[in-house]
Length: 163
Length: 431
Image (cartoon, rainbow over all chains, first blue to last red; front, side):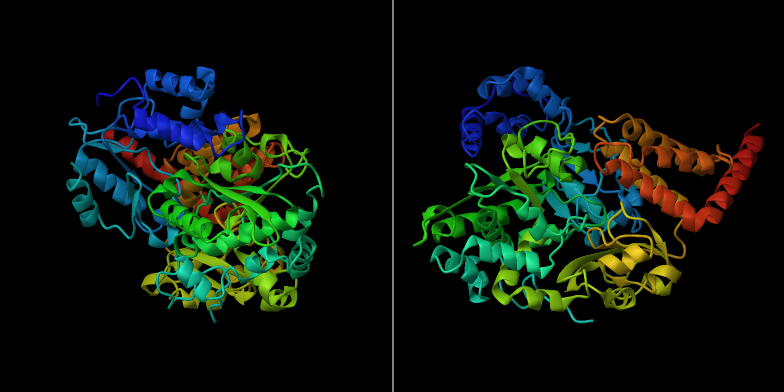
């Protein structure tokens, strides 16, 4: 769960590329992309130092970065496990066992939703809201990958493969 | 019931997301006409207006009318923004347009921007789509750019059309058009007061139109085949097709594109009927924000704007959530309430506080810590949110409560009594 406190050069380049999609002086629009790049390069979470580095890169007051990092659910501002696992429990998934799937993973991993395993391998995200795969319910997301029509056994196999 | 593909590719198309496949099906014919100078903006605008196309994102506002609010011949830039922040519970068809037919969206955006005189457009795609829908859309953008369909000074007509992708980062509220614009400006997605409407002051304070993915994906076919053709697909006031996302307790959940106005019974049958041979109890016909309808009422409905509105609900996003006769309506409503509580942006007090109240009161009902009279309180909280907030999230939190109580009040009373009795027994057992 350790992390970097500064942005790697590749992330800086990508942030500049992202900012180029917006009119000049509107680089604030690139803050979501910038935070995502920073988080991806830091084991899945954003430290204050990283958020400050993003602010500096985009020439923004740090508060404009903090308020975005804490508003959106895909940003984590505390250390979490390497692999982010989300189980949707919203209505379409709820009706087809999404809640049971989450309970199963909680007991399998020995953690509650919102916690990470002690080995830092898996972060089980808080009860997830609809991820727009309702016709494949129940579903779970690992990183950015969707798994649909997931049974508890499949969920076990999916999390076992994560290293 | 026959499937009709306007936004989705035909099921037998091979790698339908590739430019080759899209053009093989007649794709970009209309846009190429525009680039050749054979079609002007007024023609595109008038055709879409006459087609009766209504926004597919939930509100059903007439698309051509929305476009006509954009000032004409004004200084650039003006913007078109596509809303691919699909997150209304039960709804998952925009994801399939991005995955399987991204070029229809690109062509639809090109034609729409052209009709409104906008030269720059953004597609705001929800961040959770970064795994598959976003890469598909990016690949399609590259293909279209290489083919001279996106860029500056395009074709003989020398048209400018720029299209940039944008990925969100997880917030239902960014599906609200002004929340989306705030997010696109790099801020928390807190909706703006209207007026001014985006057509006057939108992205970076410039005239902007925000349209849903499926709405824009309808445009190429409308311009090519004509307004009358599109209108003839559905009943009055409900032109065209809808990709119905059928989820919940059915045998074959799926996205089925069919004309508006198909009967509910046919659609349910197409999805294999209620699963496990059980009986139908209730349906939320247009995403979790629209009122629930009990079996007896929805059985009489057709899937279009007027029929569902007359029945006391709405077509919304066309996401049909089906519930069988073993479903506990109190638990379902509590889960829906949790959603609005979690997703309220927090700027309006009635919504920020009220959604939490709804969730906690429903939790108490399930845990045996409520009285039957609390149902009136629950309803009063919902009524005090509705209409008292900047955006429609507050209304969307209230409508499920009002409709669940309207149709299933007896079940709520029974659940409160039985949970209370159960809790007392348990207390006695451990005393």
